[in-house]
Amino acid sequence: MKAKFAILALLALAGSLFYLGAQQKPAAGSYKPKRINRAIELLEQGQPIYYTGGHGGYEEGKKMAQTWADYINYEMEHGALDFTALRGFMKGLVDGGPTRSGHRTPAVIVTLPVLGVDEAHMKANFWVVQQAQAAGVHGILLCHARNVEAIKVFVRSMRYPNAKPANAIIGEGMLGNGSQGYASQIWGITAAQYMKKADPWPLNPNGEFLLGLKIEDKYALANAEAVSAVPGIGFAEWGPGDMGISLDLPDGHGANETLHPAMAKARAKVLAACKKNKIAFLNTVRPNDVEKMIDEGVRVGSGGQEAAEKGRRYTKRTMPW
Image (cartoon, rainbow, N blue to C red; front, top):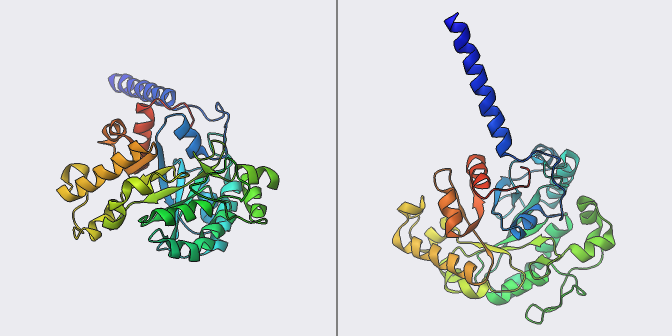
């Protein structure tokens, strides 16, 4: 009899914990999206965003359509530069969607083997950025963002020539007619609507592209404030892996508490540049430090689902995940 009562008590406790857990997470279907790009929508609400990695084609995209993450970082800097696979991945996200928040797909931000090292390199390779755009992605993360003029070309390559508002610092956009065809189908809007929404945010408050910078070597670090001030950039990170190599400290990164002093100084400089220029700062977050990182100013979290869910509860997120 005692054993029976003990089992019933445990079942009741489990049910209570399940109920409380369900109360902490907003229910799917209770939210109406206001944007195509979920990551931008959250940043506008003052909410941190969290991402996971992605690669491959249609089947991989379909599997990731219900990801816990707010956006998917699709790796093509060191992975295969395969735009056919990227298009398939985006189509898989659509077919596996919508997300719990009601968005057609999670946002997808791509890293490319095009680097922000100088203007000439960016001008010669802007077509790679545009091929990713034409696949229907929601943003690009530019690696080794050293040079202001290169960053300007990067932003121009993701704008149409008649984009509004015009910006004299950036100059005229470089996207051409036809780039809207497949991408608009992925976004689930008309080609004409796409051409109005396919623009970098926050330069265009209605834009749906989220562009980021990896300020990840000593040359980029020297220009951290200037490159992060280029209109059209929405977030930046300090890239501890590459930063460590650049500073000849390949083992100098890890938990924030154990960073080599030179690495900690580099991180602090990029964080300060992001705050000054009012863009989001990307950093690793862990279950044991996500709240501290948010309080410090981290708005894009690189970490797992456990850290993300803890952070979402901490900031009282109302969008389902």
